[in-house]
Image (cartoon, rainbow, N blue to C red; front, top):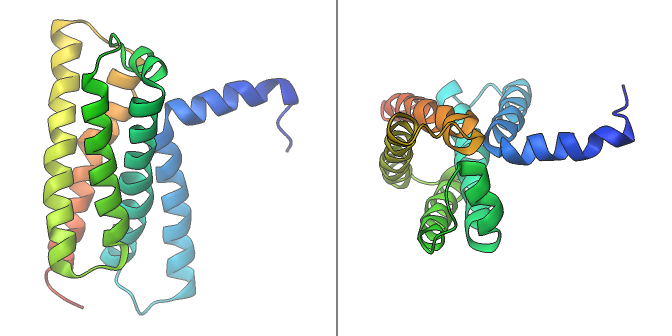
Length: 169
């Protein structure tokens, strides 16, 4: 099935506005592929690797690029005014994203630190989103859409994975 050429801009906009979900779909594909290729690795290992790489890592790097280099677009998507604070948020996104990418095949201790930092970061973001929804009635896609739900749900999966990985193979 081919996407009509006039839909490309809308598909691209949807994909970039919901980048984390796009990365989750790609991660799920690689999880399935990984499981088909080998059974020697635990399910928790497979889920952790691909969530860390795509959903946390690449999404964090993408958020860095958007906040630092395209602050007008990211502010509009989130429902914010453009602010120098976006640079700081972008740098934090870069740090947490890179740590997640590096944790793909890292030691348990490195992964544990990655999970702790990202859980605090993502749940902190989720609390900020909730505050904005309640106080400012901000239901922009970047505040109340898929970004919010990933900030709520992905930490649970990271915690489950790291808890299972703590038991060893």
